[in-house]
Structures are given as structure tokens and as C-alpha cells.
Length: 506
Image 1 (cartoon, helix red, strand yellow):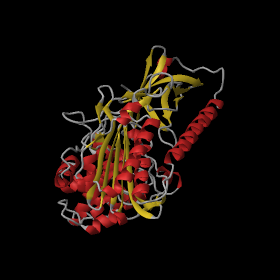
Image 2 (cartoon, rainbow, N blue to C red; image 1 turned 180 degrees about the vertical axis):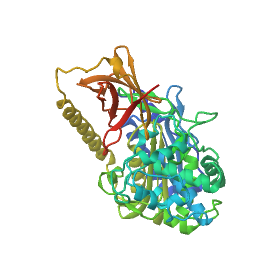
Image 3 (cartoon, one colour; image 1 turned 30 degrees about the horizontal axis):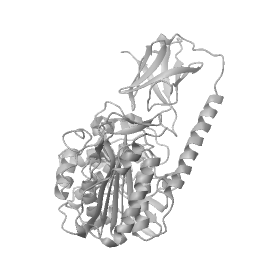
């Protein structure tokens, strides 16, 4: 069932009236077409609110809000509406590193361990050789290992101490693998070399000089006074408000909150590549370096940007070619917010899209803007996305069927449920608590809870029919020589063996 009032929400588009010079008559037709694309996509994917900003030839061409930032109160999105930008925060961390290089306090190709003596990875060779350049180009060899921090009670410095217990899935520099923990490490590196917090640096070295007065370095405070958006998600096909996900401890990887009005200032600054009258202290040489390819993305990861070819990663930024034009692009997402920023340097065009729900359309909107402003035949990105969605659903259904086919019928747990309850620990993932509640087991990783149901033997699975949880998969318990339940293994990271938690005394 479609969200009943969404069509109305999309139609009530709120725009900041741009100056005549900012909206040339020659682009009126293209902007009207973009309007139609945005409202149509919002309706199809049930997106409650969206903000779009476009810069061209050094000027703000377009700033507009669509739909609602507060569905319940029918408050409209405006260009001043604060939303979380997620991993678009990464480029801010890389930018701070580039500023340190200009100050001769950091070298991109010196080992990180020379700056952070307590830095240590699972792989000893990577520990010795990994550089600041590697930290922000996703070349460490580590997969995401996001459950170390997501929804967890953990301090930024403690994350650094846990890295040595996290298995890689490829060799050091062997392949591009998206990785948040290395950006957290980059933030710690910046803090130590500057002697100030990452939050203070972002606020005073980037936000302040660029006039990004509405932006915050963290998620905390997003719902303060003024114009802000609540996060939403589709729950049983209905747009539903969800809690804010506070991820300030991993801020260098993705905690910034901003507005489309502020973000177009940032995009224009990055387009100018250190030139112009910007007050951020970065050289053109560093800007060119950060916006140049370092690691080939390739494979399935390249498909996140339809139409973008030769996808590589620079330093905190994606780099590629869009329909024959060199492009810089990056996305970001955290619970209830998806964003996309991009620019085409040769055409001096930049685009920012912020949305307040989990949805696929920010990238599609960015590319639709490019098609129209570049005079290219428009591509039906909605049709492409429908196929991606259908293929994704089919893949999930197939995986679920294959999992169900492995189940052994007629088995039962070897112990009473109370015997499985207790605290278990892994040096990288911290403490896992198993509780018996109401005749069933429940997993707890700090703030993440997941009810379990019996699968077979001593294997339980997360029960998707009870509540909602980001945890999924199975929990396999094992016993020691005394027959006591003393370990539980969880598949928390694809590509590595299940993470084994060992029972500890409470």
C-alpha cells in the first residue's frame, strides 16, 4: 500500500527564491524537467523529503526543497533543512589530511605507524606498510567489519585498539574494499597531529571558512532549534519515523549533518580545487591529488552509480567518467538519510541531493540533472532502478530458500535455554549478551537486540518476524569438554569466518 499523502507531499515543493542571475532563462526548461523527475521518483519510491542543490559556472543555479521534513506535522523541506550526510563526511577527513600535508606535518606515503605507534592490524605486513593514503582510499585489505561500531557503545580511541583482531578478506592493497574503520583511524591521526578534536577541526577549519553556518560535525544536535528533518523508513510499505542513529564516535567516517544550502558551498569549493577566494587552507596540488584515481573500484561496487564508468577511488572521493565526462562523486547513508554529492570539473557543474529515508534515488537525481544540463539524451534511471530492486529481491529470496534447505528437521537444542544465556566476548567485537526471555533466547550487542528462534541442533537464527533488527543470520553455540556451552559464533562479516565469542564470567 502506498503512503497515502505522499503525492501531495511531493507536489508541495518549497524553494528559496534564487536571484535572477542564479537561474538563467536558458535553463528554465531543463530545471522544469528535473522538477518532474524528482517528484515522480519521490512518489514511486515513497521518499517523504528531498533537497536539491545545483551549482554551475561558479554560481548557485538551483536550491529547492521537496516534500516533508516532518511528515506528521506536514512541515516542508527547505534548502536550510538539516539532514545527515553519512559517508560524504569522509571527504572532509581526507581534506583535513591534505591540509596537514601542506603544513608539512604529514606525508601521504609514510607509514601510519610512524604517526600512531599504537596502530596495529591483523596482518603484520600491513601494519608496517599502510600509509595515510591507504587509510582514505579503501586499500587496507579489510572488509567493513561495521558491527564493531554500528549501534555499539564504543569510544573512538577504543576502535583503534580493536583493529588487530579483525581479519582481512584480501591482501593489503590487493583490492578496493569499502571500509569505515580506516577513516576513523584517519580521524584519530588528524586529531593527534593537530592536537585538536576532529569535530573542532571540521567546524573551524572547513565549516567556518566556507560559511557553512548550518552544519554540524556530528549527529548530536540535528534535532535542535530551527529547520531539521526527522529520519524515516518504509515499514510494511508505510513511511515511518525512526530514531536518530547517533554515530559521533565514528564521526570521521560519516557523522556530519548539513543542509543542501551549505553543501553546495562545499561542492563549489571542491570544484575550484584550491583556487579562488575560499578561506580553507588547501593547495591546488592537494586538491588535484585527492580528486585523482588511486584504487580501481570495479566489480559490483561500480554498479552503485548507473552510467558511471572507469570507477576508481581517490582520497575520500569516487572518481570516474559519466557519459564521456570526468566525474567526482560520493554517496552517504545512515538510518533514515541518504545523500549524494557530485561534480563534473570540465563543465563546472556540481549537484547535491539530500533525502530523509532509505531510498535509491539521490544518485538517479544527480545523473538526471547532468543529462539535462549537458544536453544529453535522458536515460530512464527509474527503469534501471526497478530492475536492480527486482534482482535484489530475487537474490534475497533465493538465499533464504537455500538457507532453509539446509535445516535438519526434528532436532532440538542439547541444553535448556538457560544454559545458553550469559556473556560472551570477542577482542575485536566486544561483549555479546545472550538472554533467556519469555521462553526464547535474545542476542544483545550493546544497543542492538535480536530475538532468536531454534533452527536445528545448537544453532539458532535471528527471528525476522519479531520486531526489527539490523542483525541477521545464525548463532551457532558449541560446548567445551565438560559439556558446558562456552562459545557462540555469529556471521557478522561476509567473507571471513563467523566471529567467535567466548563465554566470560559476568
